[in-house]
Image (cartoon, rainbow, N blue to C red; front, top):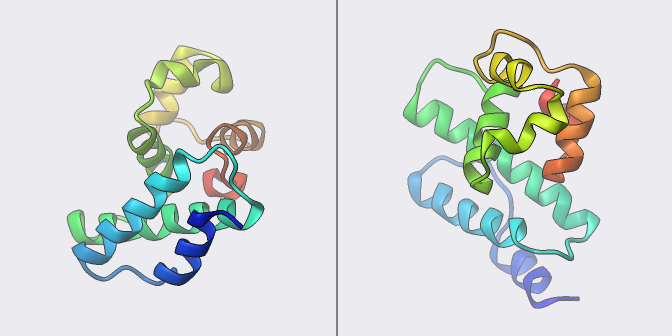
Length: 128
């Protein structure tokens, strides 16, 4: 068991995020998991869960009335990983299609969701 696994089980229990302090704590765990090259399946699940919880909190706290959706989760992951949108062109198929997805003009299809899930190391269901 790695030190992070010991710490994450002792120091962080996933829960609904209700305050900025709780959000910051969850973001720190996501950051650690994001940069881990040896995540376990359990850590992958924790990572995916925290992304959903953080995204939900930030939508409700910073933009009340807007619900999480596949597009907002994609934008959140792009921002959190610090990647360029152009890095996703190969996954989505074309620059034009990626722009349409990001601008919420097109939905993410199942094949794209699967590819995005693999790329971001999260469950594909986040994108459908």
